[in-house]
Length: 249
Ligand code: PGA
Image 1 (spheres, helix red, strand yellow):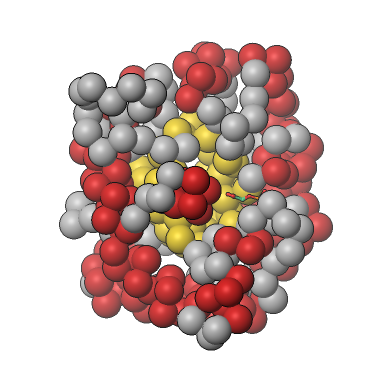
Image 2 (cartoon, protein in one colour):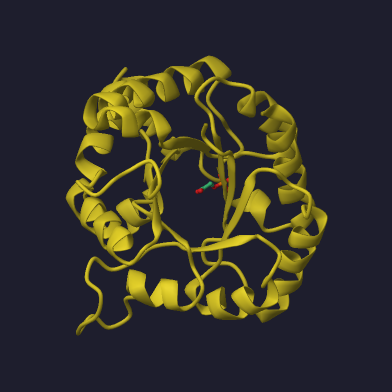
């Protein structure tokens, strides 16, 4: 049984004053059955952990270095995220892959570092619009999956987020059939790579998930939740998505 997960990715948004949104989200979703996760900027992890203590809302980082400590100015390690109150970390988000040139290999080493620090790694992958237009979507995401999964991956410590690059922050989403096709392919690939563990790994959809389209997306087979960017910044929107997820499963 895969527990459903609503994950919010605040990206480079959020100052101390925005902790109130997180508090409102915790309050408004207090009876949720699905897991709720917020990934704020690293600067807000510790204060958000204090603000949400006892609420059941989980916290995650948005990236980590592949080593535990060292001379890496500006980087944050998985152990540091855990120390600040995180239980999860996003790795391989398309913005990291494009802004910082991260490769599948690097994403796999980051996910392994997350596991070593006791964190759940949310490994992101997804095709560009050009790749979809060329009919390469399934080949691209299967390749990213195989290349980005470390040997340490299990159903407990790993979540996969399918996020088509062209759907992130654009208000555009794939059709329901396209999402279902990719999730089915990813499930098959996970089972080929990891056997029984692959059946237990949760598959999130991400890319312009909003209160208005969440229920239809969550009704699709093999969609175990969502990774939400823009709509996670407003408690009311994220709470509506959490509620859609709860009603769907
Ligand atoms: P979006 O972002 O919901 O704003 O499209 C999703 C993501 O990048 O995780």
